Length: 76
Image (tube, rainbow, N blue to C red):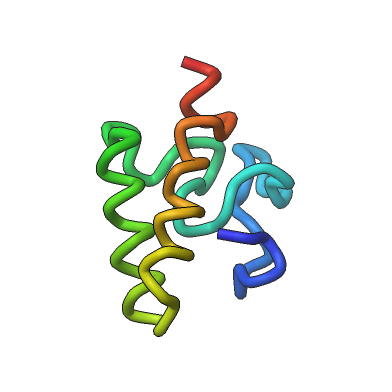
C-alpha cells in the first residue's frame, strides 16, 4: 500500500514512531501483523483488494508482480 493512501500514515515501530517502510495494515508495534504470510498470499491479497477498489486486472497484476522485491521478503 502506498504510504500516502494509509489513513494511519504507516505502521508503527516498537517505540511507537511511524514506520517509513511498512503500512499500518502489515506492520504494528515493530512486528508484522501477519508474519507467516507468504509472497503468494500477499500477491493474492493485493489483486483482490485492487479488484474490490475497481482497478482493472492488468493493473493489479502489475503491482502484484513487484511484491517479491519488497524489503519484507528480501530481508529474509
